[in-house]
Image 1 (cartoon, rainbow, N blue to C red):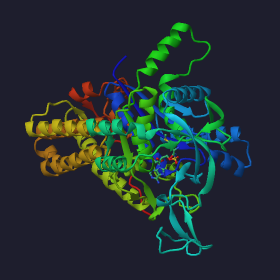
Image 2 (cartoon, helix red, strand yellow):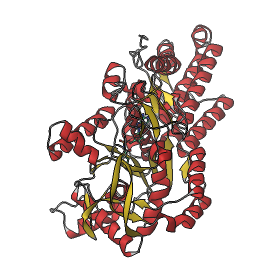
Image 3 (cartoon, helix red, strand yellow):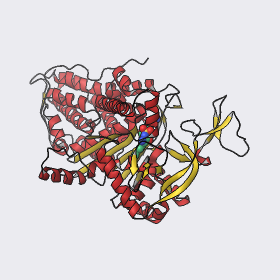
Image 4 (cartoon, protein in one colour):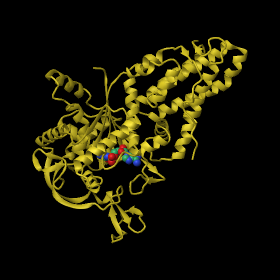
Length: 542
Ligand code: MSP
């Protein structure tokens, strides 16, 4: 088997259809997967739905449906969104699948046998919507009349109007007193600290990692892994009256796909063995992409749970921040949810990809602004890239001899050096999962190419020196080819169309067969046969 690359999205809850914020993590995974695939890796890209949850039960009830058909419907809706957005996952897993239940019970039993899981009577506040126990520090005061929230302080008294709520869901947590099983996180404190020291890029970006480390330095409390009152989910193998919730259930999904591939009954023994071996080769995962809201679970609980069950740890965790809309958290109750399918139907997938991946640093919260998205698209794809392509096409067709055929070598060594530097820079950024920098590098290079075109004025050269005009146009076409190769993971459809138009219709297949480097190292002959329609039409800002 070739080098493997395994990447995961968070496991999305199914009580709603993915919105623009969820698309962000999936898009990041998609681009990174495509890049690794064309660079020669055997990729596994898993996305999923987190189904064993009380909130799924509640949502099914609200929809007046039985849980099973509700979950089937929601899983189909999730898949439909990803398929529409062109997210090319290799596996779509549901946590209700029997193979997942079987696997989670196996790991729970291992940790129980190790003495890492114990029983305890627990009393505390529990937010069903976060599926998490809460402490006072985790809550805020809500003024029911003004709907304002503010930090809890001893100076303010609780009343009918001032209540303590979860800051994310603005709901009062339930008070719960029940028998729970707990995971001995405290036992792993030293090992976790060693992990963070030995692997300084375990969590990216570093600011988030520092927060995780600071949290670990302060306090590592054992955490509850089961509920007595939950009815829906995976039963503990050592106490069937309890159901595990959220973290054992959701996190181990990342491993289920490697440890328990789909084995259909028609497979022979040898085929099963082969599949099993191939799947397990993907662990440890190369990258988990998660939102900042769940980084602690991924960076603290998850490695400890893996150590306890005897598995290797994932290589990296990339943390994304959150989008707001009009400065507000995206929420159904506020009615500000942006549906990525509607959005891309109205504009385009390229516009969404460009805006999400080039406008926001992943280490900051940002406001999603539709007009800004259009302006970014017009400036970068329609003007910077689209106009230059049009110029090269139109001018090449005006060459006297062999119009549209460009087959000269680049003789300007400075420019050749610049091209190499640009490709290297893009490669470095992609390896660091720095998509914004990778894409920025391309558009900066395109600005340089536009400037070069203005300076060399090939439209004048066509009249005075055809040979020089051909050389300039060849250079531009060759640099564009390089830019398209670097931009391919971001805009696979449009870049393939561009290659086709330049007589390079075999590029897509070659890229899908891992040939990025070979294509980057080639020097092509281009054949432009006719004027093209603009591939990136300008969009009017509303
Ligand atoms: N099921 C848990 C995750 C378990 S992973 C083992 C969960 N699901 S979720 O559907 O509520 O959210 C999943 C992820 O969606 C978040 O971690 C975050 O990455 C992403 N986002 C949700 N809202 C978002 C924004 N408004 N902006 C950006 N990303 C957002 O938590």
